[in-house]
Image (cartoon, rainbow, N blue to C red; front, side):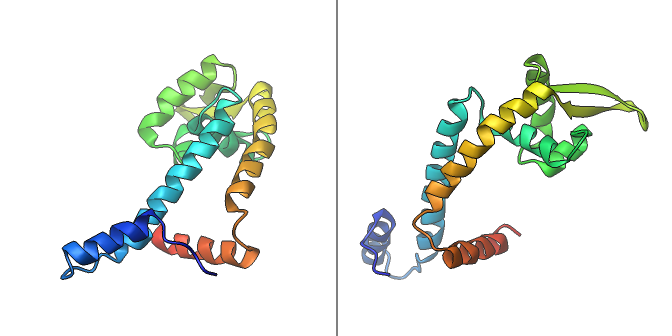
Length: 161
């Protein structure tokens, strides 16, 4: 595969001239990873915005749906299983509860704790968004073959450890 020079290649070429004593090659990976992440985030944000939600809302709804019936977990489990921080969980749940997408009820196994449950409205919204979300992800990955996707997923898993 022959690729044309991109923005990151130009940056690296400039550093080779200005600081030939330094190895700027990590910028090739980190720069492209950052640019790709920004592109992915922007495309996914547009998909979510078309449904009046954001990435964190989608993540909470998807995390609850992945649990299977009755689609409920503790807020701590939600934070651990989702891609939002524990500090953001409470404010996110307040918002989603007010929108009727989740409910919070007492946890019968922990008198002080709560359980978060996906409502039928939350499930319906997720069922509308999920196919478009996956189609957006598919379009972003379209330039890669199945083998390249698998390799990239494995390499990113190493970086994410």
